[in-house]
Every structure is written in C-alpha cells, then in structure tokens.
Image 1 (cartoon, one colour):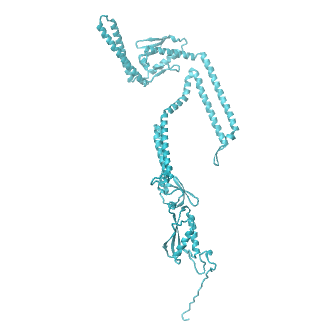
Image 2 (cartoon, helix red, strand yellow; image 1 turned 45 degrees about the horizontal axis):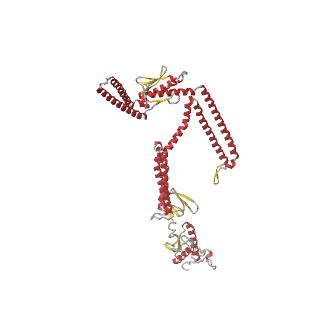
Image 3 (cartoon, rainbow, N blue to C red; image 1 turned 90 degrees about the vertical axis):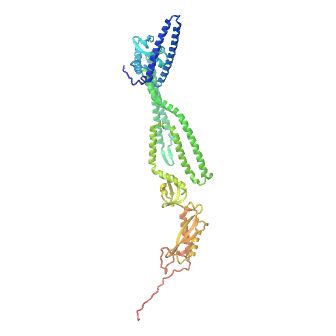
Length: 599
C-alpha cells in the first residue's frame, strides 16, 4: 500500500500532533487510574487514612480525565471544519468517513483498503452478516470476518465521531452488513430481470414519445401551411418590406424545428439517467448526467438567491434616482414654460441644462450601483470596463470638442431655432441644434450641416435676435450725380421705403450721405423690419420701389459707371415714365471752317 503523507496534510499538522499528545497523556492517566483502583481494593478495611488519600487521588484523576476529554473534543470539533475526510463507499453509497491514520497508513490509504475489503467480502457467495465479529485489542477494536480484518476502529476515530470505540465498531458492522445485503439484493437474478424489463419499457416509452413528437410536429407544420395567409403577413416599415410573408413562414418553421430537436434531446437526456439509475453498476453515470444539468442550475439558483439582497439595494437606488430625475424634470418644465423665473437663467437654457444634469445623475447612479453588480469585483470585469472606457475615449476624441462647443453655444445664446444667421459665408435659417452639429437651411432650400467646433472658431451674425424687439435695419446704397439736389434724393428714397412691405413705420426710415465721390454722391437708405428671415424679398421690393420713385420723378440713376452721349440719345428713364409729348433729342452738328491767313 503506497503512503501519501503530502495529501493527508490535515492529519500531520499541529492540531493532530496535539491530539496525539493529549491522547497519550489520557491513556497514561487511565493506566494510572487502574493502578490506583487496584491498590484501593487491596487495602484493609482498617486503613482509613490511606483509603481517603487514594479516593481523593481518584477524584483528581477523574476530573483531569474529564478535562482532557473536553479539550480533545473541542480540538476535534475545530479540526472537522478544516480536515479532509475520505469516504468508504464500496457500492456508491458512503458507509463511513476516515479522518485519521493508523501507523504508516494515511486516512486516504485506510479508506481505499477498507473499500476493497468490503467489495471483496460482497463477492463471497457464502457471506453471512452475523459472521462479522468485533474483537477488541489493547489499542483499537477490529472488525473481523473469518481470517480477514475488515477495518480497525481507534480512539481517535471514536473522538472524531463523538462516541465510544465499541459503539462506533458496532455501528460500522451494521452499516457494512446492510450495504452488502442491499448490494446482493440489487444484483440478484430476479431483481436484475425486473430492472431489465423496466429499462426496456422506459426505452419503448422514449421511442413512442419521440415518435409522437415528430408526428405532432408534422401535423402542426401542415396546419401552419394551411393558415399561412392568415397568420403570416410579413413585416413592413412604411413602404419598405422588411420580411416577406414567405420568409416569415420559413423563419418560423426553422425556429420551431430547432425547438422540436431541443425537446427531443432534452427527453433523451432525462431518460438516460433514469435507465442508468436502475442498475447498480451504472448508477454513478446517472448521477453524473444529472449533475451536468442540475449542478449549473443549482449554482444559478444559489447565485440568484445570494444576489437578492444586492438586487433589492439596486432597485431602491434606481427608484430613488428615478424620482430625483422626475423632480429635476418638473423644475425644468416650470422654467421652460416661464412659470418659474430665476434671475439670469433663460428659459431656453432649461432643456440643455436638464440633459447635462440628467447625464451626471445617471453616471453617479451607475457608480453607486456598480459595486452591487455580480462580478463587479472580478479582475476580468474591471479589465473589460477599463478597456471599454479607453475605447470610448479614443473613438469620441473628435466628437467631444463638438459636444463641448455645442454646450457652450447653448449658454452663449448665439442663436435659436428659426433665427436667420450668417455663419462664415453661409446665410440661412437655423433648423436644428444638437450637441454635435447645427443645421442651416438657405433660401435655396439647401440644408448645410456645420460642426459646432467650426461655429466656435468663426464669426456668427444673428439677424433675428434684435429684430424681434427693436427691428433689424435693412440698408441699401444709391449713388446719384451732383446735378440732383440731395433733398430731392432723400425724399425719393423715403418714399420708396414707405412703399415697401414688412417695413416698420416706427422707428422711421432715414438716409445717410456716406460719401462725396468724384462723379456722384452716395446715399444710404436705412429702414427697420422685424422679418429678418425674408431679407431677400425685402431688398428686392425696396430696390424695385427705388427704381419706380426715381423714374417717376424724372431722376436718372447714372452712377456709378454709366456713360452716355446726351445729345441724340434716349434718356435712361423707361418709356412708361416719360410724358406723352417726349421727343428724342436730335444730334446737333456745328461746322467751323478755318481760313488761311491773308485770305
């Protein structure tokens, strides 16, 4: 028999050595106690003084024995939680567990030897349970059958079990006899015949169940084909057909077939342990097969039970933060609707501020919940979290600048939805604002997407912000020659302003003379409008009206680069504005002759 002292570390540690020392002392005290009792019996009845001394000494020995027994029992109880026991299970059922060694035999070697001897004993056709004898020796008790020692029971075995050696030996004898009897009964010809018939019936039932399942699936498939037009109409999104009816039916049959195969495998898998469990030689296979399914399920169930306190904590945290967000949302709606006014905080700031605060609150909630998640303390889980955070940082490096710029633009109040603005060289209406981009619709119905970081790095002109309250000044410049009195030009320009729609009467339009150039005077007409989004039409109407008023008054707009030979040419004023008796001037030609001197 090989010795494996390294595997039996629980029996070679300091605890077992202490047990051995205490046991040796206890045995020595017991021997001394027997000697004292013998000496007490040999005393004469008249020797009362010596008798009293011996009785007192016996009392001390008994107390010491009880004390040592208590110490041994406490030591055994503490060792049970850390010591490894080796089962003696000759026929699959554990009869006893070995914790201690005898001589050079480790606990594992003892368990293996005892198992082999019991199995060999069961093979003896003439075995009789009453033939097992309990034979005590000086140090232990042996269970003997014929000339063979089945196993030995020591004082340390009794200490581990918490009963006396004699009681433990009798208990082991009864268990061995019952185990062999059960094994013989399970392996008898009659029993095996019944079990074989039972196994055949189970297999036949399995065959019928599988056949019934296949037949039922074919019937089910036929019914589905008959009603396919009623139950399978496909999936569509607007005008696009995501899944056709035929494809939907095909997917359904594929999924149902997979389910059928899974159920068949499940029935077969559950039937095999039942068949294996019938016969004693394959009983362990049944346990293993069930263990493959039950052990993971058991772990899942226990893990879920263990997770319940954390789950309740997560639910409470979630509910608390949900109502915090609801409270913040209520304040946001109140500020946005102008019901709640905070000095220096504009209503259009409410929604973006809520979005920022919402992200921060959710992030904080995740940080609070994170330690309660299953596996949160796992290095793998933490490594994946760090990796995902790193990937998110790399992938969003370009977007973060736009997000920050979008947030800053919101609080700068540079523009709002519907404003007519000029960003760089682009004019148009703001139709969408996001944290990443801003979209502008030009007067040509072009949608231009501008990154927020680009807007931050360029100039933005908002034509609508002041137009709502004070009006936007629309200005245009006309250059008229010095031959026309400036008061007349002012009068004509103001008249053109009055004829223009969408122009405010108050403040009144006004004219500036911005320069006196070489050939003409520059006149700037300024007028107010609230419709900044229709500037192109306002300018077009204004220019038309300027042309009309000047033509009606007979004032020609000859500058800045208009040249004409006045003699013999039509005026620049359109014919519709000329009087009915207007005559085109003719060319005047004057001839001058030179005479020679003296003629």
